[in-house]
Length: 602
Image (cartoon, rainbow, N blue to C red; front, side, top):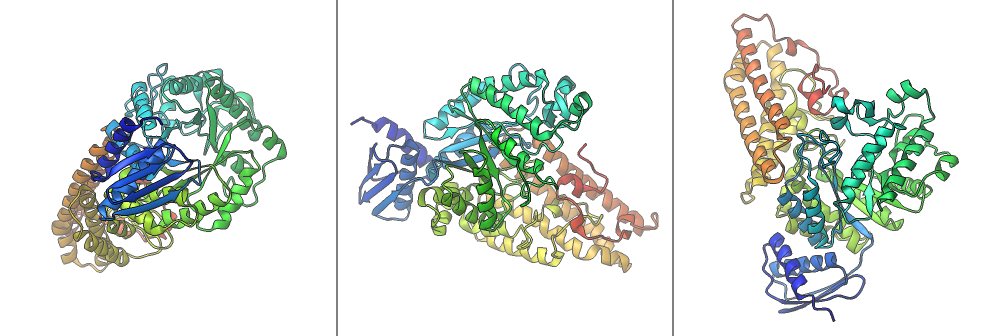
């Protein structure tokens, strides 16, 4: 029998660093068997598994048993998904520090999650292209190698996750990238310089990662072939264009001993008369299906709550080839706090259907759309949905999901109830970030079919929930989010009506009392937001959020001045409040559309 004592000690040290529990029982690790068996009888424990990652999970379960003062434990589990893990967005402002990446890896390993992608559009080093990731906090090659080795040592496969067609706006904006540009964020297909770039990307990643798999992106390239490509070559069948590009990229991957995985949506969009991914009438021509290269098709879906949709879409994907990958979502892209309810309502049926279809690779995306407002660690508890679907199968215990999520993250389960208060019950929407970034006077803040008084009640409930929790940075951050929401909802309830009624006393109190309090609330939120950001992310990217907070506080000063001048008779009216509000749902949810009707990201 191989002596694995030294290896076990290292894994145990990392698990104990996560749990805060120094195991008092003597642990023996027997490296045999396909699944995971854990046996605890008072002060002696045995973990039986070949899998390093499963061993970490076994130690985690022993640590939880010790915390709960249990003297016996019997666990027998096996993986229902061969690869199960997470994809963390490192491209929407926030690139994690090395230390934070390692903390995340260890926490994933504790759950028995064995795969991690860091989604990097241009936030990794490609030596031949110095503006690739310039000023964006990109990972160096040495850092990627270090993370890959760190993850491997605890049984987590790091799979590079990049883009080789669209979503490259940050790189393509540079003048030196102009020859590679079809549209603002789409590469120019059939251009040799494009394939020089893609080969350099793949070559850089091959030097850093041991994995034989690579995710090449290719999603949401809706304008492919319609910009510079059309000017140069004229109209080209876009199925043919996409296939030609895909085949060439896949060959480059194979040249560097990578097996490619891609997002599947462009094939479905091109087969839909409305360009819609989930269109039930979409049709993929047989000629297209037959011409697909050997590539894993990743079906991404975070939006549906009915199992029938997942069943239909996975069945469609199975017709595209032998390898269907499912990418679900832990909702980190709704603004400031994780959308707990939407994650649960969408992923519970999705994961059940994945198990029924014997999908081999499943992962949770954690996107950072609109500036990475939500910290990835706040969403860590809900990764337990994926780990328990993997290890227990479709009939997993939600109580275990909650308990394991709480233990691995250190975030009290009660705090998730406060998170829920940040979002309407139905429809799901994007929550009250609209009140945080939305303009104080213009009527463009969508509340998703609810009213300010309801938002106010939810904010009060969240603050009441948080009051009884022990102090932590996560609690302080969440509390400050709701303090801003509460003040904004209170103002929204009354301001325009009081103005139309000519209530000068209210307007005076608004200018001299409410706005200074709101300004201080924003300042406090910015400070704690910066603290939680700097704990986990590199400074590059924070400047975008700092600019948003600064603009808000500047607008508060401007509104205060406007109201004072109106009350003094220097302005005939407050023109923004003269506007008749239209249905708020006609407006967008991101910072630019919320901050002003005239704001634009370009």
